[in-house]
Amino acid sequence: MMEHRGYGTSVLLQIFSISCLLLLSFSGSVTAYKNYTVGDSLGWYDTLEKPSVNYQKWADTKNFSLGDFLVFNTDNNHSIVQTYNFTIYNLCDYEDALQNDTTEWSAADPSATAPHPVSVAVPLMKEGMNYFFSSDYDGEQCKNGQHFKINVTHGQGLPKSLEEPSDDAPAPNSPDFGSDDSAPDTIVPSNFNHPIEEESDKNEDSGSLSLLFNFLDRKLNGFLILFGIVCIF
Image (cartoon, helix red, strand yellow):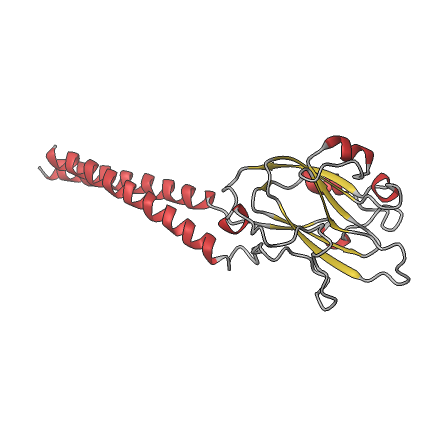
């Protein structure tokens, strides 16, 4: 009888250990939305200005998902264009682009006598290939290294703040967007909630906790069933 009870205890410990491993594996797979600074400390410039930049090499080391943000740190002498059209990207020119496949998030100002810093946060809102480049000066900056492409996966899907943009909010390339002279140079659409940091994203943390509790509930039910079977024998 004692030997049987010891065997039952051993089985329970094994089940408990396996459950812990599964729990750790599950919790590690839940990740928050991320912010990626394009080019890291080098910022968003062409090779004529910063010869060491290689944006495609930078992008190839990252995993991008819906809801993530790309943060472009540049100046008002370089533009930021996002397109889903490879032909537009390949031409380094968006003049013939359709309105629904290309967005100019920040335009260059050739007349500026003294360039000043500009920071632009671009949300990833469409799965598949996304293309980025600077189109000004007849595509010269694009042809000199200021371009890259990424593949955006589904991940957790879009957060609610990005699913249904308000119809009243102007588009990033609208003449009414950012018309206030007192607006900061950091350009983020007013209807987007930029994820600040992974640790401080309360909405994502609460979603992760909800998934975790559901997981634990299922595992607890399975554990109780196995415990009943062990007790019977």
